Length: 141
Image (cartoon, rainbow, N blue to C red; front, side, top):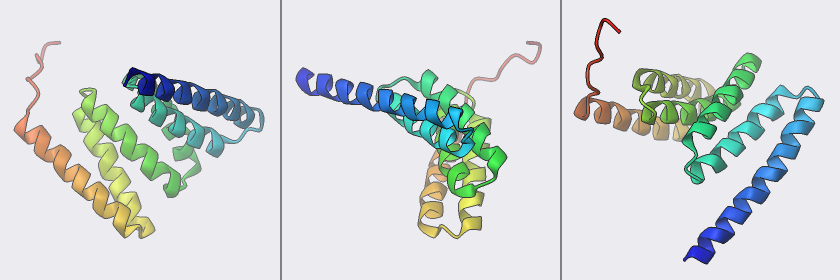
């Protein structure tokens, strides 16, 4: 089993190296869309490696890049994953809002299957937050 994990780690490392090269090319060519997509792919690998913090930073940058371009086909999947990470990182309201925005974008594009999946995800996130409320923060802090 550890051999399998080691092989997976090696594959992830190699994929990240290739993506980092592509990211550099996109920066050199001033390709914001390509940078956003590449960061999204890198974040997915980091999530598989359980590096949520690194993935979150990549997704925030990716989202900012594609949001400026206005292409919903890039904004929605990046926003949905970013929303999930924000939610599990404790920024529940921001996470729910982000997934909600992605759902609205998918509906606007007419991506019915993806919208249905995102709607189920959002419903599950809302149900989770209602069943597991966060402790109230001190109003003075």
